Amino acid sequence: MKFVVEKSVLLKTLSHAQSIVEKRNTIPVLSNVRIEALADGISFKATDMDTEITEIADAKVSEQGAITAPAHMLYDIARKLSDGAEVELTFPDDKGQLSVASGRSKFSLSTIAVEDFPVISGDELPINFSMGKEELKDVIDRTQFAASTEETRYYLNGLYIHAKTEGQTNVLRVVATDGHRLACVESPLPEGADKLAGVIVPRKTVAEIRKLLDDTESQTVAISLSENKIRFALQDITLTSKLIDGTYPDYERVIPTDNDKVLELSVKALATAVDRVSVVAERTRAIKMITNKNHVVLTTSSPDLGSALEEVEASYESDALEVGFNFRYLLDILTEIKGENVQISFADGSSPSIIRDTSDASAIYVLMPMRV
Image 1: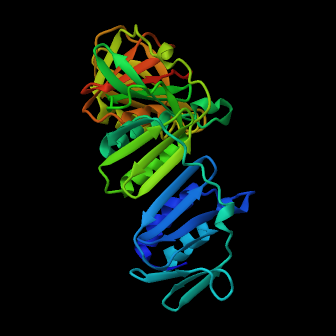
Image 2: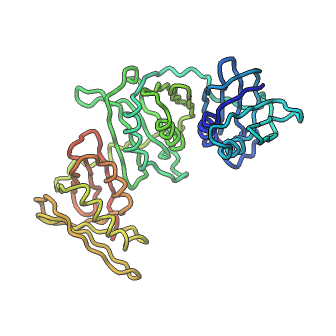
Image 3: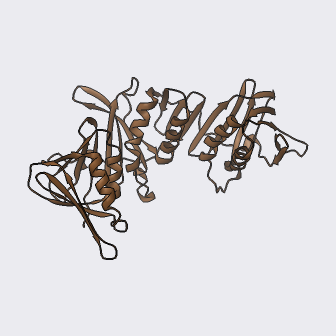
């Protein structure tokens, strides 16, 4: 195997591969990236046994072949080479290792045969549809922050995606929750996704595909699914992942339907006020929201740090109430409100609140109250 590749191309490709590879591995080959020189380019493949990425890159190939080499070490070498440099990779070199040479720099890396490298892709994935890049980025951004990080409730450690009929409209619904907050976003149902009964895409996979969306020029993403796998195809990159094997809870039961006390105000003004008050609430993360006819008051206090109070103009016609929130959870939601105004509806001070963008009905957020 022998080829020459530009440093920027090698670095970009290895950055995608090494983010999949776990830094500590009990199986040595999982620390490696599989490199294959083809007639018209090079293929890089990396896996952690749950997620696999394959990327094709341009290179001048003089000898075809394949080998695996340490992913993080290759990435660090590429990162530190001179900008604009050409990099020559040769296997085997005179030591029987992978040679990486550029200018006056030369490295010899230990390798593992490709026969030992596991492959998780290749299965038949019967459900196939496409989404626009910006549309996929949007539904991920508006939901992934609410996914759980607790390993004990593994079935919440990702995004729940399913087809749903709303009245006369078919939609693709994406849901995330950690038990404290819930994000539910809808987009038009892509052609071919009508049989999507419900899958849970792991949090790591969601984070990886989100990074790739920023790094690709492809405007559409081909998505394929089976009962236990999902595949995203973007131009020269394919990301395949196992799905979370579990039953997602009936999230619709926790979305209140009788919250009749409606508060409406500027999302920018509210977010700014919450951010300022949070300086005192950094330890407890608890702030209190007190609603009034034409304004809302945000307060917090700490025996060690003192207290803070902010008043924000608002539209509110119901009886006054007090409700406590985790300010970090509230800010996460407000960040995803793209319109000028946000609407928060309450039943009382101890029940879940509903948060909506007044200019966009495609998303709904549920936030549990916090004892203050």
